[in-house]
Image 1 (tube, rainbow, N blue to C red):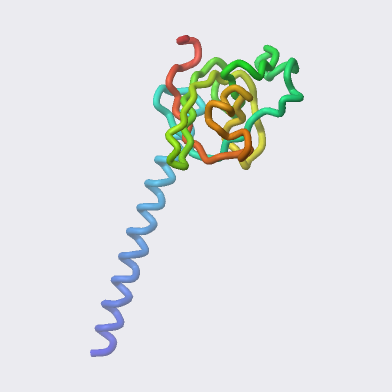
Image 2: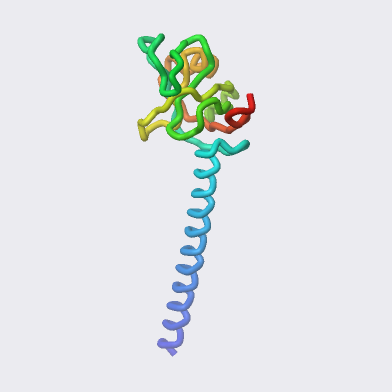
Amino acid sequence: MTTVSTMTTMTRIVDVFRLALVLVLFAGFGAGCAGADLRAGKLGAEQVGMATYYSPRLAGHRTASGERYDPARFTAAHPSLPFSTWVQVTRLDGSGRTVVVRINDRCADSRKIIDVSEAAARRLDMIRAGSVRVRIQVVTAAGRE
């Protein structure tokens, strides 16, 4: 009797393990698609992570797209979104603050997903904090301004 009970328990453990494995695989495929959509600048693609803002000392320096950084414009750097893609940046702390920025530069720091201009940082009320948790969503694909 003990052997049958042990076998039933083992079968349940294996079934739970298989279910968990399937869920992890589906989650991984979904995340991969979202990442590809984001890299392509697909309308509606989203990403959640930390945002920082440019140092005022960078005013006038060239961005990766070739234009000069202007702290008064609503621009941003992202690791992979195509240049000229417009994204909505929303703070996730419940403040309700949002801003729409155009991607014109690259950022490589793995701790952040976007680096916004000073004007955008002021609109998001993040100057004092320096970095905040945000969701970015593509609102206009590159070339469709």
